[in-house]
Length: 313
Image (cartoon, rainbow, N blue to C red; front, side, top):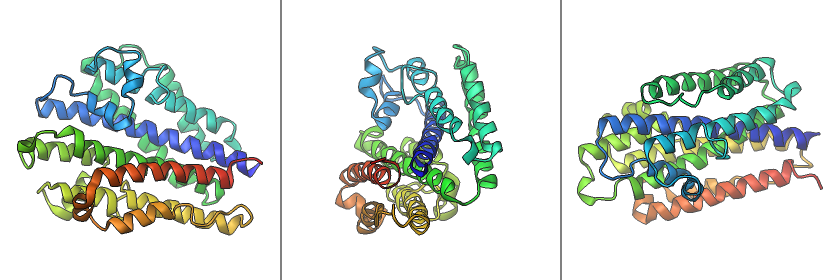
């Protein structure tokens, strides 16, 4: 029973976090392109690079324009990671576990599911995009608030927490990697106005722009952005914050279920962050290679969590 509960709650959390991340990415990219004229013919391809879905997209679309990419990320039922499909999967995983989560959590997730099921084909018409994503962002904030306010800090919460934090850690690593190696290909742009706006957009995607300004002011620098998104354990969507919370949840589960516990599941991620040191040092040593290793380790951690708490022998 524990393993079935763990799997459903873990994946419900991952799908909710994935849907929220994708909504934030589309919304921020849309507003960025209003502020900064695109330098390429396909400014929306960056989102496909972040999520690693170029091939899946090209199987159904010939050109990565605004309409096709926004639809692919949001409404497309043929895309297993579209916002609509993620909401469907989150609701499906929670529906069989309704007795394990507070009624308020189920009602908010089900409400979002019913709304997404009724999204019309023209929901993402040009005048509607800002309002659509503003409303969607508020829905996700509501769900997050209800989870924090109503869920007992028991095993169910720990599995939910691990799913959320692992998805977030993986996403922020992909986000930083693509920005650093894809979004700004021209050396002459580094440090310019467009560069600053793009780093600010990246921070907004991770809900970290205000935290950055509180610490560093308005001076955008790559090493500072990398520092706050990867290494600052006080910023809620940073990689370090996520890994610390995964470790805390695993420690609580080990205390509750010592026979199922597998020691040091998350230690690979923590050791990588500690060894990298800081934003400045990881850029000097090789940011791209570090982030590739980090995302691979996120996948390995997911497998180890599944083996310890979800796989039925």
